[in-house]
Figure 1: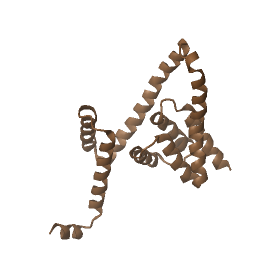
Figure 2: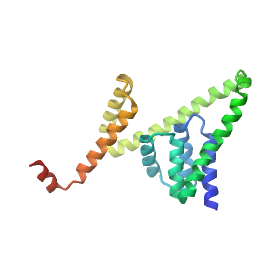
Figure 3: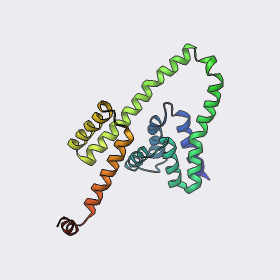
Figure 4: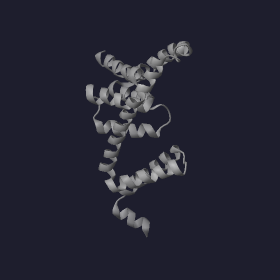
Length: 191
């Protein structure tokens, strides 16, 4: 029962404090899952985030579902997902009923403006962690070149991110399978 309570509290905090959407929730999830409860290490969470980004849907709920399942099976999955989405549902209902009456206040506009740099910094820290991981895994030259190529496709050629993710996943699978193929089998296929 304590495990279920810990799962609920961890992801309830993420749901309550994850201002700025799913990507802004990732540092909060890392703090709970890696830092506080130690359900995963940083590398495992990084791999899970990379995989979650390749799948459709909100990242916070995907992470919550997987981590909840890993920690405590199906009950943990349901618990974590509900703890992540229920605060948002409640807050949205409350805000939508009163947003028109409070949106003009200076303190509401100031609060919104003050949160933006906080979310930006959390995303910058997360980005730096991914860059370091890519540098270690691929080597810095490959990571920088791949990052520049992806930037080119995203920003200058306006290629949809889903296409880039799909191509990179397919390439990774092909490279992995090629590396697993024994040398003799490769030689046989080449002749």
